[in-house]
Image (tube, rainbow, N blue to C red; front, side, top):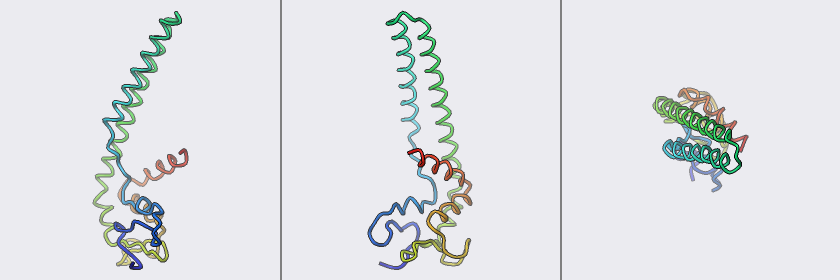
Length: 158
């Protein structure tokens, strides 16, 4: 194995362990493209909430539960639409920043010995960056660096 490789080809830490290196060096956030699935999930959950309100209103003789079920269903639909808009907006930003990210990663190489990223021409940055610093540099320059913070917050909750 060579001592370094282009960032796009670096998949393991050099000793055969995956170490999630490809994700840590990713030039852009992964986009699942599951908008339709999220929409269907949201609508099914909204329907179930509305139906549950109606069922329990009839079952327990509490007619106000129908309104509660309807309000919950509407809130779920609104939340689903907000989620889909956010995902679409993020995907659009990633597509717009892809050329800049590609330019930054083109000459970048991952050094297996020192576990860092450097630019072969000494280019956009000087010295060695950790994979996380590299990803932050690329994502920020490409215009979607704030998605790193959102991703980190999501990872902390998991």
